[in-house]
Image 1 (cartoon, rainbow, N blue to C red):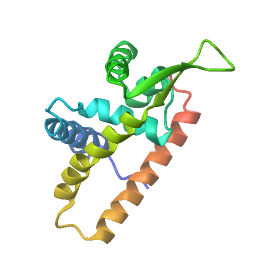
Image 2 (image 1 turned 180 degrees about the vertical axis):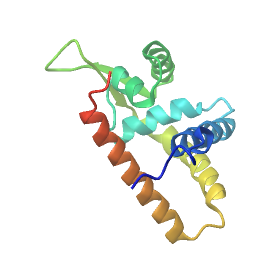
Image 3 (image 1 turned 30 degrees about the horizontal axis):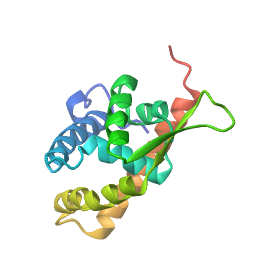
Image 4 (image 1 turned 120 degrees about the vertical axis):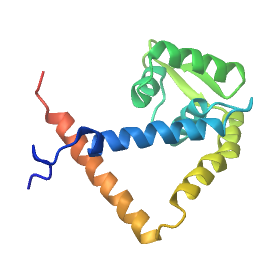
Amino acid sequence: MSYYRSDNFQPCEGIGYRIKRLHQVAYALIERRFSDPDLSFTQWIALVLLRGGQVDTCAGLADFTGHDRGATTRMLDGLETRGFVIRERDTLDRRIVRLVLTEAGADACKALTPRVMDFWNDVLDGFERSEIDRFHAMLDAIQQRVDQMAETDTQP
């Protein structure tokens, strides 16, 4: 089944564009909730990813978030200065520097999490739980399909 055809495809109404636009607007709105000196939203995301084990190196964090490696290094410098992360050399490969979330970093992450939860709860207000669960399932399926395509893509 082909959902999009030449007679109905409008790029600004496509799934990819709408997901990107949702991300851009939501990111900006959430960033405003982090406008005090605690942490930026970007810094909070780094702490969350470290806490969850999704990343453990600067390069991994930059790649996961799609940020420039230099900017990511500078952001991590600030988190390290504030005692939220420490850098440790890998015991098996001294070239690798691992990021470790400190107790202070975990506490800061936990303290600021309600700002993000409250935002998304406001967005989802009025939807039934079953609708939200179905939306999550659809996003998961789309993500899995795109990841699968990325693994096998041979297009230049």
